Length: 215
Image 1 (cartoon, rainbow, N blue to C red):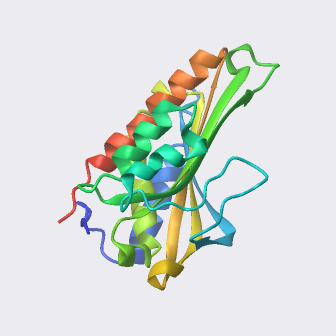
Image 2 (cartoon, one colour; image 1 turned 180 degrees about the vertical axis):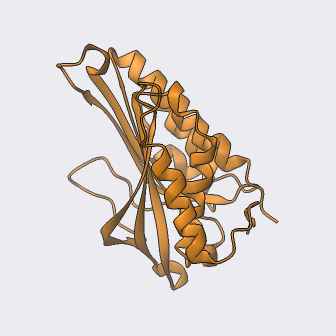
């Protein structure tokens, strides 16, 4: 898999460095609320492959790297072309990543704040295409830290990006490792405004991900 550009020494040191990079995005500068990039952990493991969920429109786990045409079967993408485009790019055979699931929703935001009345939120569960690359948690810290470096925080004051790390059992290949769910939550005064902001920030991550080239 791709070796990251910056050599920071030990894995433990890089995790500390990545945390610091992400924490920087939570600072308030020049009285402007910048985009926030966060890291958090999920206690419950993700076990693959998972089944469809009869209580909501979630399709069973689909390996889009192996069967890209199966993207047409995913109900989560039925009304969101931007999310579909992101999954198609992230699962490209020339890339480094694969997706494990996704969801998106438009809802009420903060009614008391005119600029944040509507909210668009999504997540994409992301792993490395090379199965063994998912064994080491530090690779996901690197992903979050390197992305945080690229963000123009002040340009997106109404968006939060969260990397949610989760222990993952890749049962189909007998590997125990990790994955991350990329959550993007954007606010706006109207539906169009929050969706446009969300799409811009989603494309920022996808462009960053596609800039990483495999060996």
